[in-house]
Picture 1 (cartoon, rainbow, N blue to C red):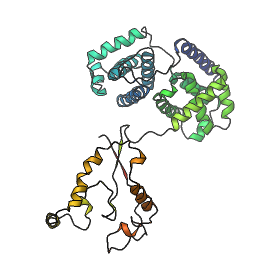
Picture 2 (cartoon, rainbow, N blue to C red; picture 1 turned 180 degrees about the vertical axis):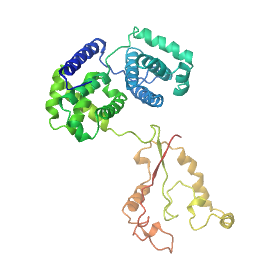
Picture 3 (cartoon, rainbow, N blue to C red; picture 1 turned 45 degrees about the vertical axis):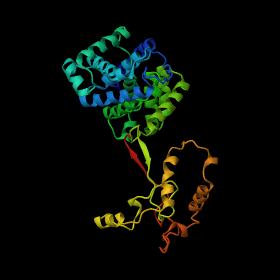
Picture 4 (spheres, rainbow, N blue to C red; picture 1 turned 30 degrees about the vertical axis):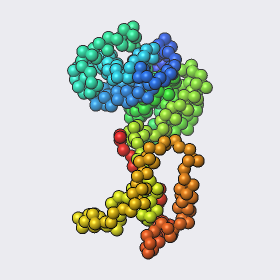
Length: 380
């Protein structure tokens, strides 16, 4: 498209008006569903996970960006008025993706249903996907055509580059590369349920406005011009910018959502300062190497005294105590010992008899910390 010609701007205005009219007909305000304890409806977090899964599938199949954006639009329109069990969510998502592919892709590029079921690893058979596809079509009255956020992004980007073609020089990208960058940001926004309350036009305009702010000196005047052409409210754009900026700046968790941290205390420098209710193990005996000779010496160790046996018999009773016991029921001596260790006031009692104190002056040594490390594990 030759944007320097006057008819190009008229064409963009016509496309924007047509897309806005179509959006006004199909747009339904997003209403957050109440979370229930039962597994009877798809939660917003599960919806976001399904969108990210579709994004990965779209990247493996290398289809048009319009296919993914339309698939997410169909998925949201289908899930909005109904309650769907989470176990059917992937089947619903892949059915919406298959409908979007048949709508946007060339016939020779549309994957077969068997290939899509195998590559997506959705756990559904082709016949099950076909039945779900029919349910989606019946629920949407066979009307899949809608103005998506990507349509508005293309229009606004063409308008911006037509008015200020020089701002791309500061970015170092051509028009297609810059549009691809904005499209990838749009993928991130689609996987955030907090942005479902925004119209596609406002989402695209917020992305363009935030990008213009970083690379165009007169970005405000250009944004106001785009806002006027879109016939949108300035307060809605300000709110959309805040939500989009927050979504793009939120770091993704590097650990899985079910990560559990296990508390592993460091070995105390003194065996005599063992907390009450714990048993002595071979790991605590630092002076003995882990060899066969050491094992022999351990076997020759004298039997425990009756006082120690009496103490060990009380251990199970301590383990059965409730985790919500009150502070008044705890031993006052435990608190006092903990305070002394916290302020390193009991150095002589924290080391072996006859052993020199730690170089750092505390019971834990110079560089070592009394705080135990937290080690992540995937699942218990």
